[in-house]
Length: 203
Image (cartoon, rainbow, N blue to C red):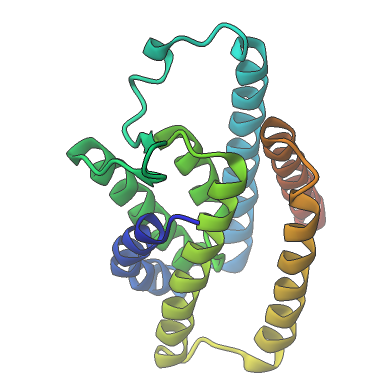
């Protein structure tokens, strides 16, 4: 878990989440659902291709291969080295996560995971734990904003939240038995399945 990174992403996301919520209330449901499914499918395919490339280059990586990653993990301290490129990459991730969380009604995990995968050299387990913290923080602000704007249906939200929390706890158990690339591929395949199912259901 990278608490500082999660907090920084969440803070930047909080600024754009209300904008997404406001825009969502102005748009019909069908285009929003289709947009969510397409974005999810695109991110899933990108992650799947990225994980396969990592498998192919795993034995040939050199220090120059990771030099372009903005957020480097200092293994002697166990912390990310904060630089301006790192802060900029995480801020952009937070802005996109907050806006999509408000617009599409999601926690933004499917944005945070590939963003952290691209911007950092953290393990997949650490990325997933950090993304869960970001989801919790941004979702809390999103719920408060939606309640203030009168768009919250608690009879649906509470059972769904309980189910989502249960699913996350179960998923965390299985995550310990999967290697980094395999965990990333599993996340990508599951996301692709969800996106395809949503498109089929919509039409």
